[in-house]
Image 1 (cartoon, rainbow, N blue to C red):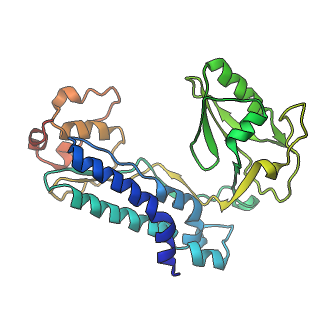
Image 2 (tube, rainbow, N blue to C red; image 1 turned 90 degrees about the vertical axis):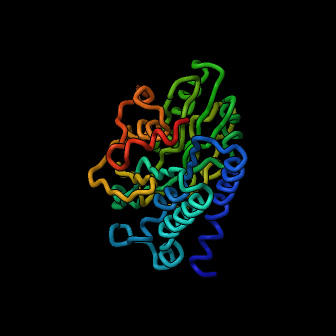
Image 3 (cartoon, helix red, strand yellow; image 1 turned 30 degrees about the vertical axis):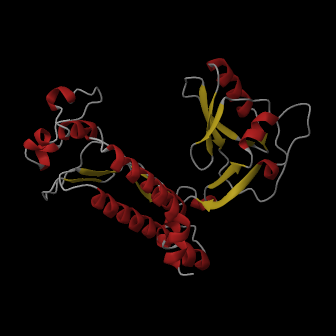
Length: 292
């Protein structure tokens, strides 16, 4: 199997399925406004930037790893470009398309001198939480190693946070915990070093044998190689070609969309700040054409 077909086999189906569902409801409902979010290329950037550009890193990937994964990030861009073509085929010429990313990425080299940043995931999140006496209302995966827990009260969430912070492995506090409020917390294994051998997890309960680290976690076999960059991309299809050279604020996006929908000045008072970008690239009659 060639590199291109390898990536199309493992990365395309979820994106295609999500688009097919969107297309079905778009054709049925014909909404005035719709959004579509996808994040697969960001994962490829986080995981395989090192294989795309080994020269940027002190910690080099193996030649075999580059051979398999070196095209992953490029494939992500190509797959997103193919989806954009599908969107163009889905809508008519009077429909405005907006391609917007909040962030982009860049090489992550901060931990290269110590072996790179590794990630560990819980094998059985629900079972582990029951083992340490926690019973949240829901367990929702967030990022590679993180979960969001929802509880019946702020007090239960705070008690759960304290229990998770108490778990240790050797010199490490195992879990990083944040409490965003609303009876919820976000937690994940914050150990970034490579754990070559197992060992006991302390603090999981007094009435049971301490479990081994690798009976609770598994390594993802990925070394982080991409991290966020504050600059994103913004492209708006209006039927006219215009390039704005200067950066714009992400806070301008809501105001711009509202203006394009024809809501006028009253609709721009979103409370989030920002300005409409319509005057930078299009005549003012665009909003009138698309009055919702």
